[in-house]
Length: 143
Length: 111
Image (cartoon, helix red, strand yellow):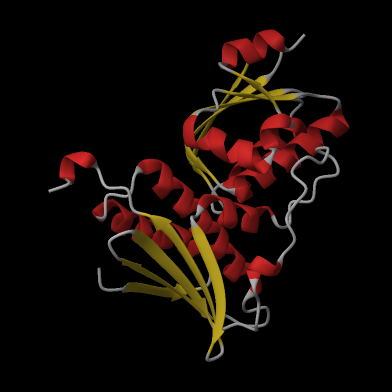
């Protein structure tokens, strides 16, 4: 699939629109529900992260691009905020007692755990987070 | 996300449906705060119709649990299955909340 892109203001009120955009394309490619569900959570975590941290003193945009090849469905999130690699955050202690639990980093834990591959790169003043899952096609639709 | 609330003898029951994400989780937290202010002590949260939960949803649950701990009440979660359960498992939240198969069982467990 040729890349398709949605660009919105980096604001939580656009979360539903962003998730719907990804979900429609994931459905078109027959991503199995479990993979799709995991990817949507990862996209939400990355999107919300951009909304909260990319543009501390102003508003800015975030772009979501979907593409795919024969094996992978790929989502890229792009913002023009300061250099920030979400993958540099430490892994949370998921065994901590409820009262001591630090939530920070749980989002990136989901991004890592619920996708098959995730990579960060800085390119021309933009942060680009690339998340991908393997496509598992419905056997009934295999020609 | 839709939130239905009802009072039972031992707890307020919150039945959630839809998506518990960064947009909808604040409404859950606000509902619990209102219930606490109006005298509710313990809660059962029914997840049977929840399709989706993100870390924002978990964050709201954790905030609620902390409020509960201060007031001496309990919070129990019911009917967490499928993809939602997977999120609880990978986050470690599955081991810090008391979970039950059904709301009825959760209510019965509140002594």
